[in-house]
Length: 524
Image 1: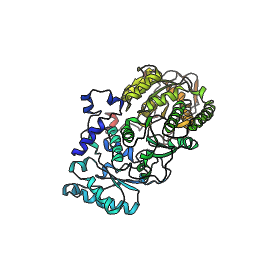
Image 2: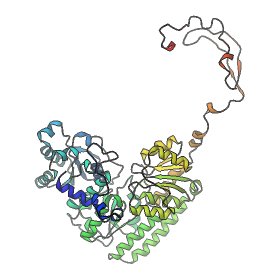
Image 3: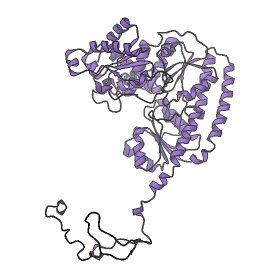
Image 4: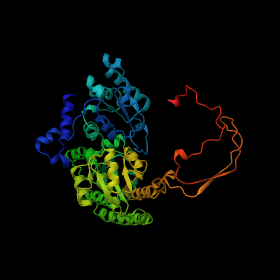
C-alpha cells in the first residue's frame, strides 16, 4: 500500500463526524473502526466493492476497472440504482489484465490505451478509474496515468485508488467519497444558484426512491443541486459546493463528505430519513429550516407545513384499508444503517410490533434512536447467523421477516413471509408514497393464503378416515405386458397400515417369470 493511501485510510478511520468514533479513546481512534482485510479474504464485500457502490450510480460516467477480468467481469449493474437519463453507468469497462501484462509491467500502458478507447467510443462526461488488489500490489500508478490522459484528451479522468485489501466495504464507501472531494467537487461553477439549492448525500436512488421524494421538493421550490450518488451526473457533483444545505441519508457511508463540505465551503448538513410518514415530514422541516437559516424566504416554512399536512392526510387515507390487516403483526427487521431505526418508526406508526432490529453498519446515533423508539436495547441484534435468525423468528413468534435477499431463505425455511427492504429490492419505499407501497407489500405477503397451507399438516401426516374404492384391474401392465387376474372393485379401508405379516400374498402365478437377476444391484 502506498504512503499516500495509508495516510488517507488513517484520516478516514479517524472521522470526527462519526459518533461511534468520537466516543472512543484517543488510542482506539488511531486504530480505526475496521479491521483491514488481507488480499483474497474480503468476505462480505471489500473496499473496492464499497467504492463502486458509492460511485457507480453517477450515470454519465464510464467506470473503468483496472484489473484482471474477475474483479469486474460479473459486476454489471452493481445495484438497482435507477437513472432518468444516461445508462452508461450500467456498462462495465475493464482493462482485463493477463498474467503476461502483470509480469511484463504492461499495466499502465494498457490502462492508458483503455481510457482512450472508452473516451473515443462512449464520449463520457468523465472516466473513473478504479485500482484493485492486483494493480495496487504491482504498483501501477493510476493517478499519473489519469493525469496524463486528462491532459491529452480533455475528458476528466478520476483515479479511485481503493484496492480491495485496504479494508471493508464500508471503508470503501468513505474512500470513494474522498475521491470525489479530492478530484470532482468544487471543480465546476453552476450557471445559476438559488437560496433553495440542496445536496442529498448517501442516497443511491435504489429502485427510484429519490423520485418519490423529488416531487415534494419541487412543490416547495427546492432544487437538488447535487446528489451522491443516486441518479447523479458528473457536472452536478462537481458543483455541489454551491448548495445551501445538505441532507445526509446514510451517515455510516459518507459522513466524511458532508463534514468536509461544511468545513471547506460552509454547507451545513443534518442527518435524516425519508422512510415513514413522521421521518419524511421531519426531514422536510429540517431542510426548509436550514435553507431559511441560509437566507431563503421565511415563507418557505409555512408552505412546508401546508404540504406536510396535505400529504400526511392523503397518506393516512390511502393506508386506512391496510391498517386492520397489518395491525398487531410482529416483525423482525434485519437490515442496516439508518433503516435500523427509520423503518422501525414507520412500522410502529401502523400499529405493527417490531420484535427486533439489527445493528449492522449502525452508528452510535442510530443505536440511540433505536433505544428512543423501542424503549430499551433488548431488541437490538448484531450480525446474526442464519441459525440464530431462525431461532429468533420462532422465539419472538414473528409474523414476517423484513431483510435483504440473503436472508429470504431463512424465512422460507421457517415457512414465514418475507419482504425485501434492502439495497437489492425492486420496489421503492421512500417518502409518503413509499410508505403506502411498503404496507401494501407487507399485507400482500403476510396475508397470502399460501402460508396457512404451508403450515398445515401434509396430507400424509393426517390420520386417514373413511375409505376409497379401487377399480378392478383391466388389460395388461404397460411395463411387463402381464395380464392381471380379473376381480371385482375392492373397497380399501383408510386405516393405519397393517403389519407386514398380515399383508396378503400375491395371487399364484402372478409374478412368474419375474425373479430377480443374480446380478441385480438391488439384491445387495
